[in-house]
Image (cartoon, rainbow, N blue to C red; front, side, top):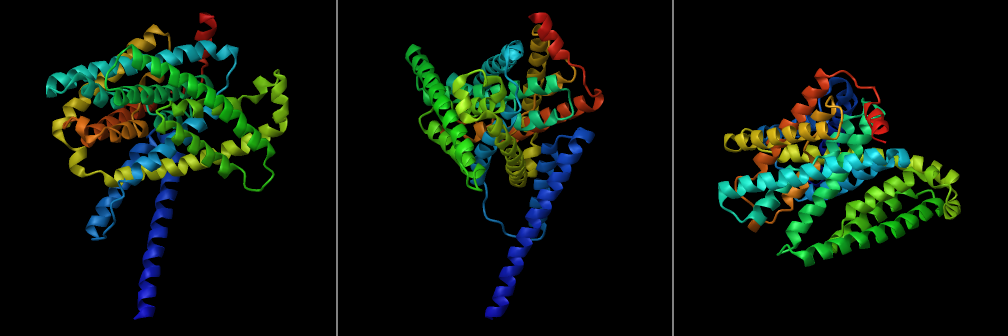
Amino acid sequence: MLKGFRFVSLSMTGAIIITVCALLLIAYLFDLTSAKTKVPSVIMLLFLGWLVQQGSVLMKITIPDLSALLPILGTIGLILIVLEGSLELEFNRSKIPLIKRSFAMALLPIIALSFLFAFLFMNYSGVPFKDALLNAIPFSVISSSIAIPSMRDQSKENKEFIIYESSLSDIIGILFFNFIAYNTTINAVSFGYFGLELLIMAGISFIATIGLALLLSKIDHHIKFAPIIILIILVYEISKIYNLPALLFILLLGIFLGNLDELKRFKWIQKLKPHELNIEIHKFRELTTEATFLIRTVFFLLFGYLMQTAEILNAATFWWALVIVAAIFILRAILMKVFKFPQVPLLFVAPRGLINILLFLSIIPEKAIPFVNKSLIVQVIFLTAIIMMIGLIVTKKNTEPVIAEVDQVAE
């Protein structure tokens, strides 16, 4: 009996390991081919996760509830995605016009779309405007987890814009969401506290960034990058406890580490031995990229697994999804015209994904609107990803430095 039990136990363990490895390798193939096929890997990952769920039902395999893992994986994934993107950004005087316009392109749609959707939700469901606004914000933020990888095959200038825009959109979206969620009344005092929190986070970011850079340059142990990533996650989570804009720290850390050459003119930077540190940062960037792929893949596979067919095909929310997506791209087209960005292919790159799911899951049940549910968020994610896919397929690979030229004119 004991031998038989051990055999079954090992078989189940082996089956789980084989399944997980197979799914990750399939996801890797999706990632390899997405640049050529223009099909966003998120769609294929969600579909693959859904197929696993259907297979487990057909084979009558009982799998415990894994929904509690989603916020954990999503938070770690968001940290790594923003860190990975910010490590690639070049920050110098020539980039200032692009950064200013990217900030405007991140901020204005969040404000405009959030208030528009909140007005519609309030009038349709009769909930207070503040609750409607809380439910509207998750639909107004661009997902860097999908936008950044989708630009891998595009020009450097367009890729930089999407990294800045989507990373800033994530940060502004979380700041705006937390501001509405944690303030019972919105007045001058709450805005004052908000400004103070930004200043505190900027100071913490500066100190933590210098400290982490010193650790990276001083640690001689063969294990050095894992503790750095753990410390980054720790600082992020502690900052969240005090309602501080934690993603700001991640963005500033990545920009600082990725632009040491631009800071060599400052004498105190020489203490970090920038030439040697750049070698370590290159290795750190590679590790971050690998870790981001794994966490993002598992998150979307799990989210796909937890999706129900009825949620995807929910006709009651589909018309709302169409209205939301139409508003997103109409406003984006107008703003891109105003700020003189090339419409093709950047107009189509406004996907929703990981950050939107995280914000949606952060809405407490007492503030949730019944029809603003998982079905609606899934449908919006699918529709924006499909529009991005079609846009990238029908447009030729954009290698012209269009944005750079526009910035030079602006200067």
